[in-house]
Amino acid sequence: MYTKEQIFMDIQSIMSEDYAGYRDNQHLNHPDNYKVSNDMSAQEFEEMIQDYLLNFNDGHLSFKAKNTDIPYLGFSVRRYEDALYVTSAPKEKNLFIGDKIILIDGVDIPETARTYKKRLEDDMLERQRWNAVLSKANTVQILRENKSFELALANYDKVPSKPEYSFKQIESNITYIKLTDFAQEAPIKKIIQKNQKALESSENFIIDVRVNNGGNDSFYFPLLNYMFDQPTNFSDLFAEDQNIFTNHTERNYQLWIPELKEYLMQDLDDFTKTMLKEEIEVFDKNRRKGLIKVSDKDDYLIEGRSTPPNVYVLSDLYCGSSGDTFVANAKKSPKVTVVGRSTMGIIDYMNVVSVDYGDYDFIYSISKMNQKYATNGKGIAPDIYIPWTPEHLEEDIDLAYVLELIKK
Image (cartoon, rainbow, N blue to C red; front, side, top):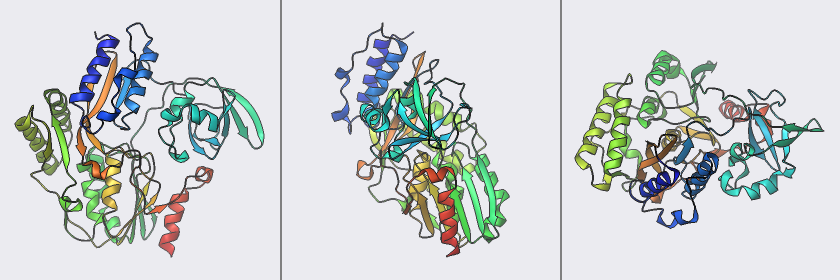
């Protein structure tokens, strides 16, 4: 069993040796500002480690207690101007979508934002993360149809997250696919194969990744065939110096190889299996050599198709990791238009591994991109930006915009 002090010391070692960004972020690494003791509460310890990690501005860094999750309040919010708007309320039956939160424990939203600036992780209002802040509160003041009331916050069991891979024929010339992650290859390939004729005969193809929890980049490769109009090597989508570097330490070897082997247990095509096996071979070859540039032996050939001639990608803050890279690569095709808001922006550091500390899990990245192309905290910007407003809760503004574009 690890003590809290031992855990913090080990995390410091990882952030100084094994973490892919240990060189880039030396100026942000100040563990001396955080005093960890074995007699502090589990919640205090977890929050202190999280505060330490927030300094690195890396959405892939995570520290969580296994048995003390952040309380689930039964609803989610998004900020617009000086209020928080309820965007979903699957458990809290006293709230409805569109309700405005104007006070948290008697304090207005702008003042609360100043107090918890670091936790919100962004100065742009529509990108702020309020769930962790609300989890510390006792009451909120709700405004509904010009009537105000106070609500005592409660905790609920979390609603299990179910991935969605869905297809819809909106009109005879418009097809639509929604993908909430790239964690599995089989369902993505299945939905494309099942609707191949519709996709190839369609003039307009809409891909909705506004909520996408990432996964493995290679799992979205079949989509690229419809997004580019001619054969293209995947490697040609990147600048010559847009390289990936992996930190081949012994610890990273012990953590990453099992992850790759677990991926191999999925129902994969031959190309993906070959890629994963070669990645294992490369790590074996470079074991204990530290941070070095990685070159892929295999290159994926995007077949390219003239149909559909128009592809639209819907993006938002809740699209991250492999979702980030999907949107970034989509923008490199002349027949793709990205509509919505910037993605999460957590791809500067990638290939995450997990350290098991008994009662706690620590997640960090072992690979990084050339920082010349950094997007952390900014995300991948859309071609057409549509600000988030409460009207999005009443109508799918983004989709309506694309459908209007198609009509024109």
